[in-house]
Length: 256
Image (cartoon, rainbow, N blue to C red; front, top):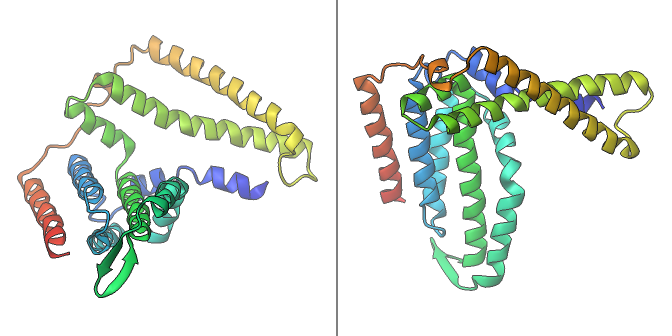
């Protein structure tokens, strides 16, 4: 029970890092970080399925960025493994269809095994980039920059609401967990027979909370574009940083 409560309470870990961080990466323009993250993900996704060395180069680059941000690499890596089951399922299927052999530095490796490795690496690298962005940029700043980029307001609103309701859902779950533990002090985890009623009650409480939040926003005349206008000016040095990172990505693709 305590381990489950601890995992729930640590759900906002990345948000806390973004709010309290003081590194050079944290101080960068939010729009710049969004653009650089997109560039990185595009290069990773478009890498050849048999080019592991290129992906290792991208891994080295993201590790440097994480070190500069002073964020724990282990904590980001652990969260990036959330997509591992899906990438493994996709990659394992290639073992049965890709039967050719690829020569890498004099070592013969099955193309199926190689594609499995690259799919897993791509998944981890993309998630590392996303989580690094979340750990160094407050979500309000990301929403402000999306509004500044003229992203449709309905999309920004849905993104903001989904993100915030996740925390509300976790808060409700923590309250219910505490109530359950008070009623059953000798039980370390939720009994299987109580799981259905627990989830059902959580769903009902979540619907009730969402209705309250919606009515409050409606009474205050909430508008996503007027609420997220505090964006930072994109300075000339940010363009140089984009060109520098883009040059490094191209260099990795060419060299490896």
